Figure 1 (cartoon, helix red, strand yellow):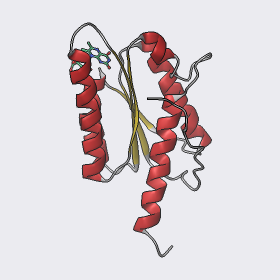
Figure 2: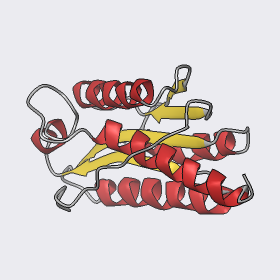
Figure 3: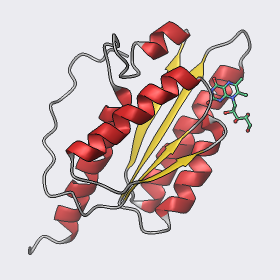
Length: 161
Ligand code: DLZ
């Protein structure tokens, strides 16, 4: 999937939103970039005290997202890196995480920012990790999308304000 065509999102009046970031621990260097990008985006949006939880691997992201969605968070951001290996494991884990996070979001009505990289190589992941020299900043993007969606949902749930 190409990163071309990404919108410039403007998000306002979101400093009071409760946001949780869940981050897997595989592929440390890439994950460090994703988490830093996510926290930078939250600071820019005026969201000062996000909850940040580390889970073992990407496969654990959906269950934690589901539980947090039931605990009053307005938006959840899931970060992970899955690198293709020589077995079909990549497909199973990638599909499980993607379907699981989608299900959490749709079933609970809480937006889940999808910051899970599924790449053929670590180089591709580093290029998307928001590190010096990276072309993309997927942790930052995932936060912005999740918070933007939370503000949209808030505006339609309280149309008289
Ligand atoms: C097992 C595994 C493998 C092979 N690769 C990755 C990966 O590239 N990225 C990632 O986040 N997690 C990986 N895991 C771990 C699984 O996500 C999960 O933590 C374990 O299967 C235990 O449930």
